[in-house]
Image (cartoon, rainbow, N blue to C red; front, side, top):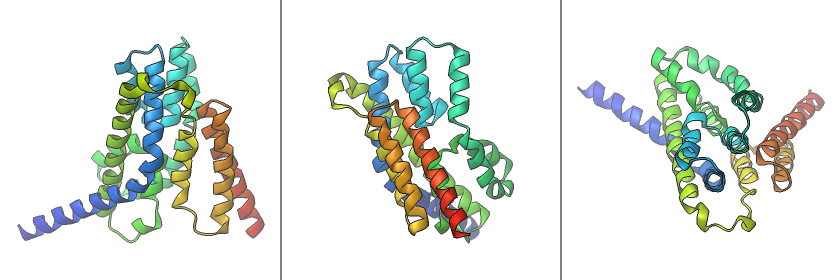
Length: 235
């Protein structure tokens, strides 16, 4: 009985730590989710169908792309092809998390990939998660992922509900750069990380003049390129 109580306490502590680690990222992610909700409200898509793209795709850039393409009448093949290109980075994320997932129980190895998105990977790969056992890492991951899921789908619903009352002239394109900045902020530990972060953030600001999904891709490409260049020069 005492052992079970202790195990439950450690599980709750790990999940709470994961939720706490995710909380700082929500400052950029919630406005992004609300912006997507506003986009759904303004599109010809049924609101319920538009909201469902959140839990089904669970990726802001992918969701915006799907909404834009479906709203314009694009075919299913075009939508799927676009999403495959946009989500190619998740293959790298999966490879990075593979060593940690290999030692987890089967049920978690099936569930965890659904949550492999930028914020969850950022929380799960943070240096503060090292040195803990498999069970702690698993519940930390689920605490972070669950917090993001609830906040993300809730923000989309709020955006859909508030959409008709929001003046389109205000523009919500700032949400994508804000989201990227929230993800990068916790990684700014030295000059080797600052330069790629600045490059990615500046490129993401192109969301003011180009489609948001393209701006996110450009931001990731710019940050990755500068990071590779910085590492090569330091080696």
